[in-house]
Length: 76
Figure 1 (spheres, helix red, strand yellow):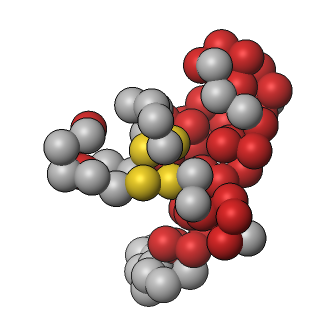
Figure 2 (figure 1 turned 45 degrees about the horizontal axis):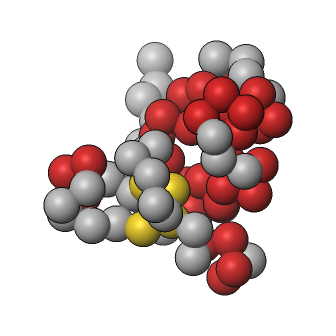
């Protein structure tokens, strides 16, 4: 898993410090939005010239970040 996470970098000079796929300007949040819109990892990899492993790295990074947050859910 550490191998996958090495594919993600955060640099304040690139995309205002958003996490991106190393060597690109493709942000983790963009990949998540594309997945949510119905694109497959293979389609994303092909359209944005990254690997399926890069897409998996974005998912893992997001899971690690969200796993550290407290999520508040409103009640009705």
